[in-house]
Image: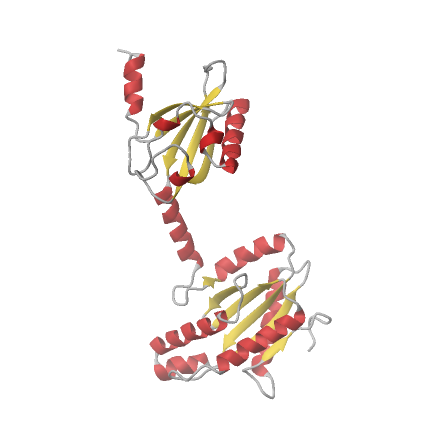
Length: 304
């Protein structure tokens, strides 16, 4: 037995996720479902209103672009977006989820016209919990648990994005001197504390845009966007001096640094190889080895 139109609407009205019927000229024609109040505000007050009157201007433009794309292509479009209830005029934002919410939208062109206008069904699903879980898992995969710094994996991903724009930058490779002796003498718990103290000390010398990562063990990398050679040398020396000045708790330690500019056209692995070579020179110099900055000059790329 087929459902009547009334029965069909009654069924659809009980859908946990909401369906917005939107016209091609930017009106809310109908609101259906959305009974799961933990995930949605009541959208019924939007019926008959223009999107431009209730949504932020940028959001209105984006929604209409998706509506037009679905109508012109004749195919279902799938999008993800974020929106907070307080950004929507005309609904009771105090009831339902608070703060920024993340949604998946499926936009299907409808065969019927409404007052002569084409329309789409915009089926919304709140994916905030899944999104936040994905973000936490992503952060865990990119972060060093002990120090809270980003890890080597994140470093290379960030470098690919940075180098895509050929932005000038500088690179510092750091290695804590004689770190094994701290672990051997005082134990790994004190070694972990030393790593945390070291990271806090170095981070205090950096700007928000600088990328400081733990690449492994007692080795670290700093990527510095838009830094000149004199500024790079001055920063490296400040870091070296700040670490050397840390109080013995329980042991004092120093750091060696290898520095280089990342030149246009450089692969990041080339820059890493240069920084690694000059870090080795800082640690193995015949005189005054370790607790030292060694820099690869731009002019030669290999000779000090």
